[in-house]
Length: 135
Image (tube, rainbow, N blue to C red; front, top):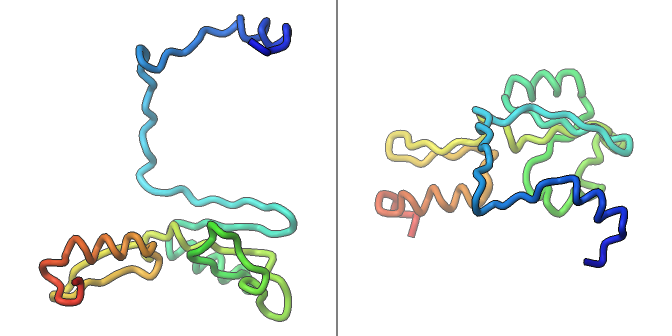
């Protein structure tokens, strides 16, 4: 009601969407995360999805910082200073399949190094009846 006449005119050209009566088309989820690369402020972030990709990037980008966890708060400056200078390339390991797994082997719980703490807790809780240390 407080919109400018131009906004009201533009809005009149569109049909209102009623989420209660119309169904949205659900896009299929990708089979697995997709590798990504983006650059900003002189830093390039790589988000590979396989260990082979990580190893290839690491071979090419010897000064790259490897990052995993606590990235929601941002990366502290000192956390990615490598080789006597700031890393301009960062490789995020959170989407690497080979680092994100939960398995049982010979009665042991085997956890990938890339798991979030929430995933570790859930894995232990799920097996609490079988694992003496899960109490």
